[in-house]
Amino acid sequence: MKKQILLFGIICIANLCSFAQLSFIHISDMHVSTTPAANSDTNAQYFVCAIKEFAGLNPKPAFVLVTGDISDIGNMQPLGMYPAIIQHLFPPALTNPAVGAYFIDSAKTIPIYFTPGNHEYWTGFDSIGLPISNDTLFYYPKYITPDTDYVIQTDLAIIVCMRSGHDSPYGYPPDPALIMGTGLSNAQINWLRNILSSNSSKRKIIVMHHPPVNAAGTNSDGTPYTASVLDSATNSLQNNRTTFLNICDSNHVDVVLAGHEHQNVVANRKGDTVGENRPGGTRYVQTAAAFNRSYRIITVDPAFVTVSAPMRSCLGTGINDGNNALNITVFPNPAKNKLTIGCTKKCEIEILNPEGQILKKLRSTGIQSMVDLANLSSGIYLIKVKTEEGITVKKFIKQ
Image 1: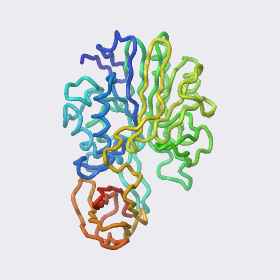
Image 2 (image 1 turned 90 degrees about the horizontal axis):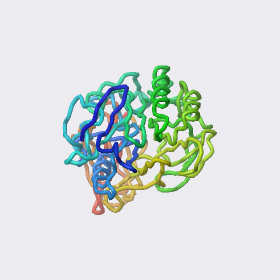
Image 3 (image 1 turned 120 degrees about the vertical axis):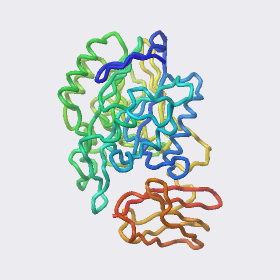
Image 4 (image 1 turned 120 degrees about the horizontal axis):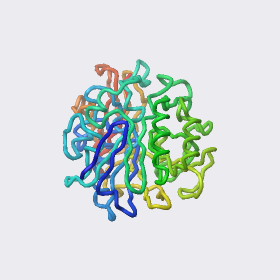
């Protein structure tokens, strides 16, 4: 695939520039954490399963777009956990990649593009288990893509990929709904204006991690979303939010794609929920978490950008996706010195570090097992529980 790359600029995908219609996949919030992915991280297992499914779709997607929270702790040793992702992309183990240098298929016909989320800036956890954030990306530009805004351009459309920033304020206040992304700088705003105005005849799609407009929608499984949404700016952009919305209005942006909230919803500028394909005005679309198997298909033709209903990948694969089919409980979480694991059947329990190394191993024949954490340092760990019915992997935080 030929393409020209200009960072903080435009990528022209040569074999898409003459298409009358194209479609691509939108996913968000992969939260892959460990390596090797196939052995110790359910989120990574779903990512691997999903990209294989996407590569086999007919019609084949032009590309896959990931809007942030790719790694659970992107600035944490080792390497932001990104090797858990890139070992399953092509070419594998690429360092210092260009934008669009990764593909989901070995033939290198379906690129995968990334934008950073707030978890990309996380460095670890403080003494009470709350995340510590930074304002600089360390491992993301080395293993995923340069830390820059860019455009994917075809004859039909421009897809503008933007950074929406780290957590602001740092750390979590009493109400997590008060945490926002730092938003867009004045330089980003000016660049966006120029890009949109110089492509006035094309369909326009903007992608970023934080939702510029928020509203309560549904979880991946279709149940109502119950997290706090105080208003349309909840968990949104701290800087230049209103200016961004005005730019979308004045330049007739079709769709803004985001994640972050782990829910499916489509809203207008006012924060009213609307249909995926309501005509007139910019649609602000959230896609629920990829670690819960959610994705959407976005189809572009000269007259309209069509957004699919929420879809789910890898159904019936046997990978536990967080719905806890094996009825495993882990509490408290975060934990200090003791962790209780509940298992309704006989089970084997393993405690693993983020690299997938087994730190503790025990068998349980009762309903609950107590695990001593006194010798573990503060951080994020995994629990792998094996029963006759399958395997469940859960995360916990040691304070």
